[in-house]
Length: 486
Image (cartoon, helix red, strand yellow):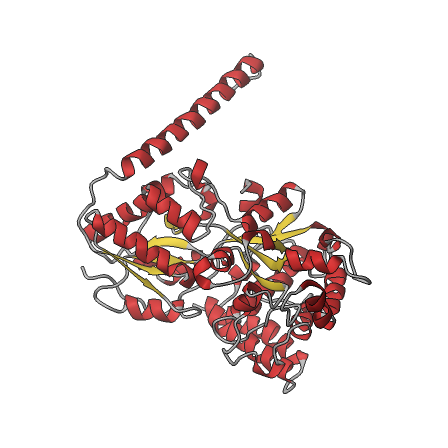
C-alpha cells in the first residue's frame, strides 16, 4: 500500500472499563552527495531486505522461550487459522492459547478475560484512546521485532512515549459486488448502464440498484441466476449493525471533518453538525429499498448478508476485504468465486469523482504489561514467529486474506486479496482513499447503540429520521463530554 494511502490509517476505539492484570551540509558537491546518498539508500534497502530474509530463514530454527501465551483474537472470521497456528507453534514447544471473541462482543469479552488471573498476554487495541484507557497495562513495543519489521511506523499506536500497539494488517472496505451478474445485467435491453465502469457516482448506483431490484425475475430468467435482491440485507443486529453505525457512518464524519479542515481526519471533534446526514439517509434508504429483507426484521439476527452475496442472491454487499477469504472458502459452500468478486467505493454523493475505498485498520497487537516477564517474552517471540515463519505468513495472507505491513511479506507472501489490490489501484489512479474517521467516535459502543436504535425506529416506521440526526449529533456531543471529562 502506498504511504500516501497508509498515512490516512489510524484506528478505532474498541475497549474501555476496569482492566485487571496477568498472573504474575553545504551545496558544494551536490551531485556527488546525491549520488552517494542514493547509493547509501540502495545499500540500506538491500541490507533491510537481507535482514528480513535472514530473519525468516531463522524463524523455524529459533528457540521457543518458555512462558504462557494467550491471544484474544478480535476477528471471528480468522479463528480457525489462528487455532491452527497455535497448534503448529505448540508442536514446536510453545504454549499458546487463542480465544476468539464473538462478533460484536470483543469489548465485553476483553473486560471479562482481563479480570481473570490467567489474563490475555496479547490483545487488540484500536487507537491511542484505548492506550489512554488502560495506560498501566501497555507494554512498550519500541524494541520488539514486530515493530522493527513494520514498514510504515505510522501504523503503530503511540501513547505517552511508548509504542503501545503494532498494526498486524491494514484493510479496505466499500461495496462488494458480483461483477459477473452485474456485467450480465449491463447487456440487457434498457439497462441503466452498458458497462460496470459507468457506475462512478451515487446517482448512477441508485438507478442501477433500483432497476436490478425491479427486474430480479427477468434477470433470473435470462441468465439462470437466483437473485432475490440488488443489495444484501442491511442487518441491524449486534453482529451486523457495525457495518452501518461504524462503516457507513464514517462517510458523513469523513466529509464533515474535511470541511472543518482537520489535518488528522481520524482525530474527531467535540461537536459535529451532521452536515452530510441527508447523504447518509439516501444511501441507507437505497440499502433497505433495494433488498428483499423485511425492514421490520432488520434487527432480528436472522439475516445473513454474507450468504446472500455468496449464494448469488444479491449483487451488492457493503463490507470489507476481510470478507474475501470467507466468500471464497470452499468449505462455506458459496457459489461465488474469486473471478465473480470486485469492490467499488461507497459513493456518497459528495465527491464521488475522486473517492476511493475506505482504508485503515483497527487491529493492533498489544502486549499486556501486567504479565510476567516470561509471558511477555514468550508473547513477543510468538508474534515474531507469526510474521517471519512460512506457516505464520501463509496463514495471515492465504488463510486470513490479510494485507500485512511488515518487511517480511514479500514474494509469495505479498497480499493476494483483490479487494486490497483494488484500493491500491484506485489510489494509483489518483482517487483519495477515505480515512477511517469513525476512529474518533467517543464511547463508541454507547454512541453506536443509540444510533442503531434510532435507525431501526426510522426503518420500521415507528420513528422519524430526525431521531437518527439527534442520536448522531447530540449523542456525539454527549458521549464526547463523558469520554473526555476528568
